[in-house]
Image 1: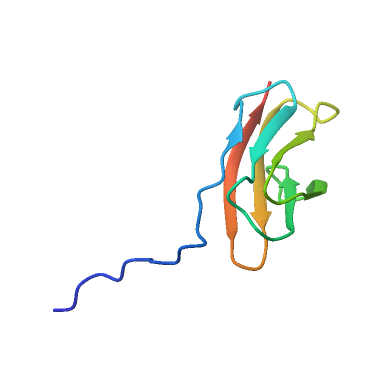
Image 2: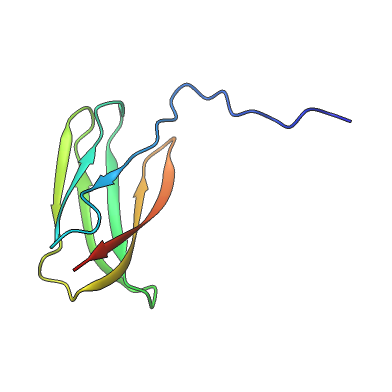
Length: 90
């Protein structure tokens, strides 16, 4: 019986998108991230509706206020990170 593997990657940092829900302006804190990062937003049909490059090591902001209210999937991705979060626009 082996122990479950624990992820000890020191580069991993959970990225939060806030406020969530929002009227369309979201902040993304990349202060712990060292490499160029992209955020892609998909609607519930899986269609890409927004994409933006994010700057590492600072607080970033995206504006999806032009999109319809509802649920979206935000994918934040770079060389060592690939995370998906549900965001709500209301």
